[in-house]
Image 1 (cartoon, rainbow, N blue to C red):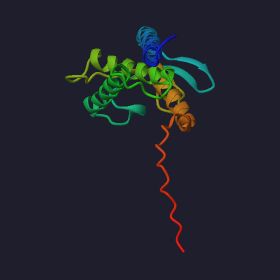
Image 2 (spheres, helix red, strand yellow):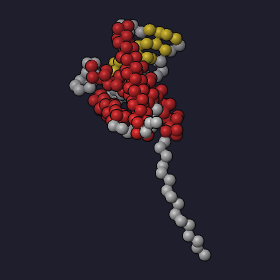
Image 3 (cartoon, rainbow, N blue to C red):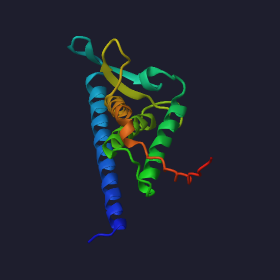
Image 4 (cartoon, rainbow, N blue to C red):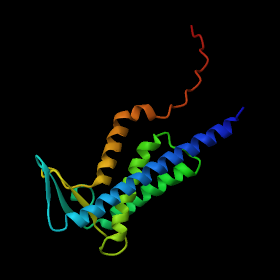
Amino acid sequence: MGSKASEAELRSRRHNLVLLGVAAFVVAVDQLTKWWALEALDDQDIDLFWTLRLHLVHNTGAAFGLGQGLEVVIAIVALLFVIVVAWASWGGRRLSLPPVLLGMILGGAIGNLADRAVRAGDGFLGGAVVDFIDLQWWPVFNAADSVIVVAGVILVLTAPRYRQPLPVDEPDELVDEP
């Protein structure tokens, strides 16, 4: 018969393994697709269907090209997110959010942070993120961006499921008043 502490430890370990596994998978897919885009789209675009095309862009801003010139600030915010999720998960404070969704967001953030760290740019984390999925009526994006948005939308739509219940106060004794 297992104790409650060991059951909680097992759940926490499983939570962290799922989070890490999903994050690693997202980073791998993101970096592989970006590597492919850099090789295949350097001198050409690939039209797929309707308005969807593959078109290489080096994005120094935030989502959708906004925030040009704020590369370091954007990178620091993403880095802080990664640190907070890691601290909350491994510090014994298992987040009540699904580890798959947290892993998706964490992997996407790490994928884009990796670009900022290794791509040519100005100073610390000043590199450009590789974007290549172009709808031609929406800003160009990449696999990491897609995964972050999908996980974020699912979290917003399912947020009420993950709210922590508030403690219920004990009712005061009723006093009969004449």
